[in-house]
Length: 124
Image (cartoon, rainbow, N blue to C red):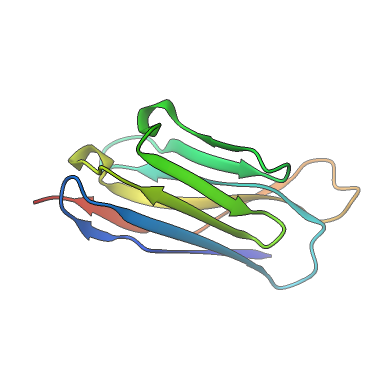
């Protein structure tokens, strides 16, 4: 079992910044975290992919936040960050961290784990 904990959410004024963190911990030895990422879900909307990092060091962000959001992380350490700048009310959502985990070296497909989410509210 892998637990993901997000921190850093809160209330911020339009134009402001926030930094979200995600930390993974496991109750047993796992083989590998293949990738980690962020999704967000605004009220009444579907969950939307925001950004991700993979075990090769690749970092990608969605076009909708490109230039404003930056993702960084280390899957070997199970840590990931989302730096959010120039926030606007449309960024208001619950932000979820996820991780794709291979339990063993011979596991054919990774399992997905999710955090509980952290609320980000952009409002004046």
